[in-house]
Amino acid sequence: MQFGTDPFNAPTGSDRLTSPKYLVILAFIVLIAVAAIARQGIVAGIGLIVLPFLLLFLYKLYTRPATGLYTALILGFVLLGAGRYLPEGTQVGIVMDVVLGLTYVALFLNRFYDKVDWKPVKKDVTLLAFIWFGYSLLQFFNPEVQSRAAWLAGIRGISVYMVMIIPLALLFINNRRRLDQFFTIWGVLSVLASIKGIIQVTIGPDPFEQLWLNTDNGLTHIIFGNLRAFSFMSDAGQFGANQAYSAVVATIVAFASRNNGRKIFFFMVALLGFIGMFLSGTRGAISIPLTGFFLYFVLRKNIYVMVSGVVLLALVFIFFKFTFVAQDNQFVRRMRSAFNPNDPSLQVRLANQKRLSTYLATRPFGGGIGHAGVKAKAYMPDSFLSNIATDSWYVLIWAEQGIVGLILHLFILFYIIIKASVIIMFRIRDPELRIKMAALAAGMMGVMVASYGNAVLGTMPTSLLIYTSMALMLNSKQFDLETVKP
Image 1: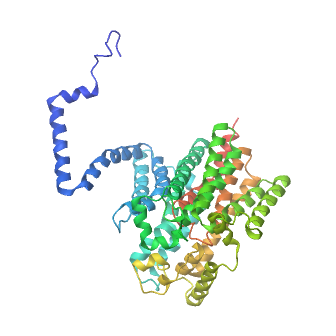
Image 2: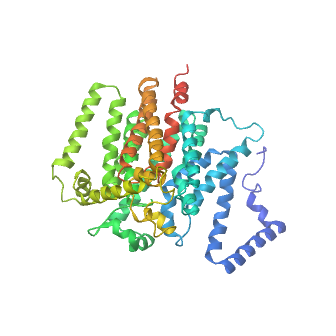
Image 3: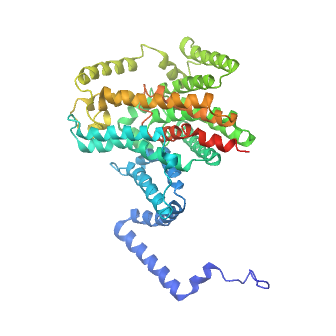
């Protein structure tokens, strides 16, 4: 501001509206809005409200393509649950496809003259993602495929998001500051998810959620009159598993944090995550902290920590397996049933797997992506696979991609978790970074085990967090070089 200028009488941007030219433009915009609402209804009105934010997002995406990756992670938490508030049949998943696609477009445009430096992406984790994606593409020619539309719908969650997320994570989360940002965003989203779950159980579901429960979804989410919290995620199974996953990672990250504020924040994330796990009534979720913390104790390479941790986990196991303490609590009672080998639900799953083994004995490449489980009924209501509940993620892979696909998938998962563990134990020099990477490995191991009971690993938001974690763990050297610089 120039010397002597009166700041109270200085012209502002709003003064331009007094100009006839801008008044005409404003009036023209208002007339278009009124006409659109009159012809198309409230949907057009909402569209006009959203339009400025959409344009702002596109601008931010172009100037900072990393915005797309963080947006995808946020959408992973809310997108599937948003379908409850939209007309039946709305394909909400297309939003994720668009965001990820636009992120790559923005990346190319942003670095149009400099060219994109793909060196950070040239890692074995990227190669494995492309191999898995290639196998999924070849499934298009599987002679068992009855519906190409089912294949197209199924391949997105099975391999497309994996092959799109991993390169973006390697490119954009490439320093310690961005790594901490990733943990913070994850933590905030987990807290919001748990709060929403608490509200559902204590106050009750909102009208849209109640309509969703009034359908067949109520059969699995209302047990003996008690609601299983599902928050704003796809279902209670995903909510419970993801919150257990988040709680394990947050607990370990809290111990790694030197800042007291961040330490308190992540302990709060962990506490609310465990509360969310119990409120969901997802029995298989208990395996995530049991397995995850066990791996973490091993990765610490400290005999005192290892023995203490194993004793603690053993006490938790004994509590659920051999006691009836707090049996009157519905959530504890349901979790305890996960340790019962004679549980009726488990017996049904084993019977289904026996039926599948007979069917798949002559189909080494499976019955086709998108062809198994309840979701396939929309495409093939009378097929054999669509009328058998797969439940387990690995059973789903086995049913759809055969024993060949299952072996390849398990090889990729165990290759990543074993290599990450070796890096954490023997290669990372910075103690704080070692614990943070151990948190990601522990969480991933827990999800891998829990995915035997539920299709956790391939469903948002857990799938997106796992893919990002894969990239970060196998890129630990980049973060370690940064921390040990003089």
